[in-house]
Length: 525
Image (cartoon, rainbow, N blue to C red; front, side, top):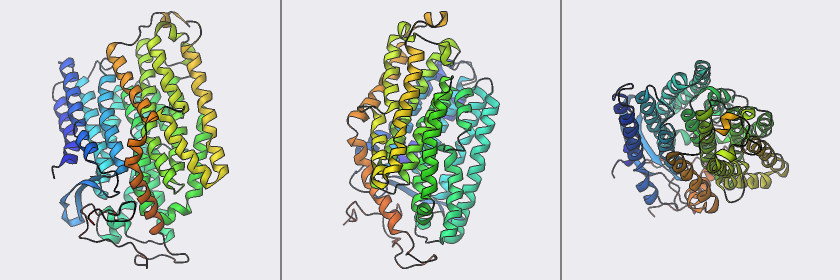
């Protein structure tokens, strides 16, 4: 098979390196157009991936595997399933959006800026497709470098503080994840994630490993209380970096790929804690968003609240909850990216993100106001928008699991409406606030096309989510079944070899993944 996933990973990385070689500021327009062409070409392999993906099976597809480091049994092992498919697609789309959104916003060191984003895009594709523990860690850690440079070089007043805080929060968590990975390697003498999943470890060991992985992924979600880096990145980082972090959900994906399937007993044991932390994030972050006076910080706390629904859905251990969590990652990624772009467009025109510094924007920017209204309604979770789909599935799953958990989680509907509509009223409606607002120009053709494309995605997913849920369903069912089937028997203190261990056939598909369909039938049967 043609190595389409390798192309998806390496094309933007190589293109980003070439863009950096174009020079610092000698040819800014050449850099912009070269970056746009590279972003489009990097996203092109997504088309055959989506067209050729089989939605009825749960095993990995488009698998590539060959030896990498024999001494550690590490492989270049990549593949996609129904969960990673749409995150891969979102990564490609996000790269194009960031390039277009930064077209005029970045005027210095343009080659380094656009080149860094292209490299970051390729590394994130590697995270979403890696099926080898060492390969995943390399890609996951490598994303820190371009993000650190983008925040620290192209940010605003306190950019250095924001970059250092983000870097050390992420690095500390990643080191704890590395310890967990090394323990699993010592048990299997391999970095093959399928072999890790076949282990049955004592509960106490699973809990320690769970905490190690959680330390890395909770930062990237971001979960309360390790979310404090996000408002600073939104406030002092460049808009492009905030959009990239907002649209691509590395933390939620990591929890779904590592914590749940590899450590099922610890996941169940710590589920009450994860549910409590998720509910605290939903309610606390929403209340904090209500008192914000800066648009960017309001959106940062909104992201923390909405991602609380993702972690809640994952730890319901149900198909509906898992479906909803994945849909929330995808749909809110688009919505938060759109809201950040709208905020960035205002900031680029006025140099201010203070809510009190606006008022009456609809009078001078009617097209901008219309798009912002749509994205605000999606942020609230209005039916017909993408924001509704994931929230509805998670809340329904929560109510089915426990009515009171669902009731508390449902407060997000009221609280998100409160802070979003309050923000929209203060900024968009009313009398023209000052001369800066009175002199604003409406959207350019490039900005109109950019927001228009995102509006199509928001409405398309909201009105017809079936193409996405069809791709997710089979894998979500398999994940839930694997968690339940892989748990230790009641009363068993745990061992590496127990009855009921899931059979792993070394001659099965090269993915080393569960090859059962939804009905439990092998795809080659």
